[in-house]
Image (tube, rainbow over all chains, first blue to last red; front, side, top):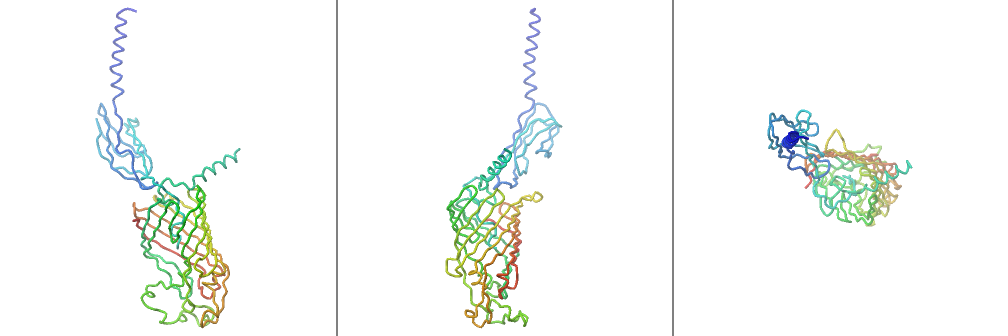
Length: 129
Length: 286
């Protein structure tokens, strides 16, 4: 192998290393805070205000989905830093999409309030009557 | 092998039947008093001649569950055996049979109606020798019962309860019992709504029926009737619908019907062969 051939290979490797990180880091992780919603007991629905944070290196159209429900869309957006009111009654996946392409996602969990020492009730409701 | 797997599945469900990992309507927090007040419209019908239907307007409910002790719906108990499926408790509660002989109407609380009019006004002349008004018989006493209660939590939504009780203050000197199967159901179409459906039966010993519904010429002054009580079986069903409006507010609908048997309806004191309880309203948890 000649020295010019070695040079070409080295240039290609350097160029490859330079461009690879740029394409891989084009979008950041979706952050939704808080990521846990507390309810009094299982089955109760939960409403809370969350902060949505996300960044991109290039302007892009994006929509936020709660499972299959579209919540909000942005046009030509570089970064998102917004408050949003959400409502859920079970663990949910929040996904940021560009058309059908998933850009990022995060799960929001429902937890019940402090699980103290509990026991089964031994009389039926309104059993006196 | 297949049956063994089914059995294993059934046992795995049973073993978690009594688990309370979340605060639900079937579970109580140990060591905390719970107080709620229901407001609405309802009635608890009185099957006796001259007995007032009991209006249900404002209903307070208090409950407490300790590690062993509990108080709920008029019942004070101590659970001396408990595993995932079975709880056995010693209990005491007020026998509510006397409630039918008590004058509940506000008018009867404010005015002494014993001196106004007569029970005969409400009866046909030809019925006067068959029926008896509660005002014409001697006063029945409140009884306090004590005994054993078994709870079998078949799974997370179904439970069976059995009570065997005897009065402890020498009122009727007899037994009474209850067996009740309750199933909880969630309604998918109505979020935050739980329906509880119970079927059961009350069993009353001869002595109990005789004390409250028996008539004796020797003990009832001025009465020329005799009725000796017999042991009685009165089946019932109950439907409770609860809708959680907010963290503390609930909408409630309660329907119960007790079917009285001959042992009770043969008594000259008894006019109806049923007891209905209906209530609709809202309750607030403090």
